[in-house]
Image (cartoon, rainbow, N blue to C red; front, side, top):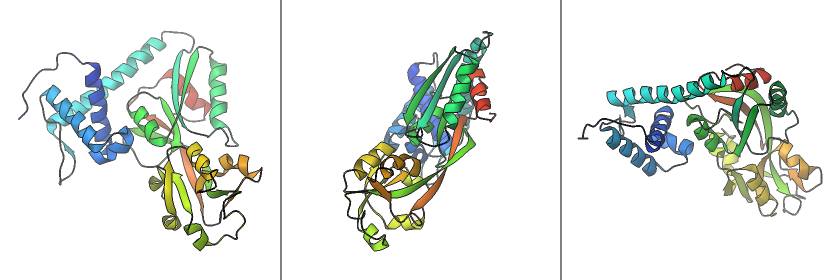
Length: 301
């Protein structure tokens, strides 16, 4: 039984542990929180145990019956949401004291979207800059898992990424779609061969680490996945070794396709359309800078 104790002061460590706890609750399990937090299940378990010891109460039950909050855990969860929201409200109220739009926009974007033909994000950022020169924009290029975690922890205000899984606590706004195909380089054996499924299945393939969450067609299960990468540059690097075939967005691969250095393999079968979204936190207070940015995108939070 845990020793009851009063929390006299909320430290940075407490905030870190509370953010981990929030992510676990919002993911619905320790396992579900692994990809969000970028931590192993054992590390997450240690963090939750440390939080329980610091608070002197059992927060959740985990075992064969599944994950569930105790009554105390539900209370702590709701209080932690209010705590994070209060910090955001403080920043909003301070920023609202200025007549000129001021503040920061922290935005996470999946790598290599700049080559997509319609530059929706760039145009919205331009409108934000034209509205006020007192707004500082901080862009973080990352992968979907890291962007999701940063959103849940309040490090990012908005994320631009594919919708891989439904995450409690995030609101998704449809943005646009992206078509991807399977590619090989000009020195790969498949480049000058007819597209035959049996030949493709014998080649080493590289896919994004989040491919399992992308609802790929069943045909992709037959690929010999010999490598993964957490970003598109990594996939392209391996394709350009001439030893791998790789799954890349068509707009991104066009720089090599146009020079005859890559080609799509059996695109009528190995092609996929991915929907991209603007992601924001459901619990966050409306912020003036974020509101202006979303309005520039033709969205409201």
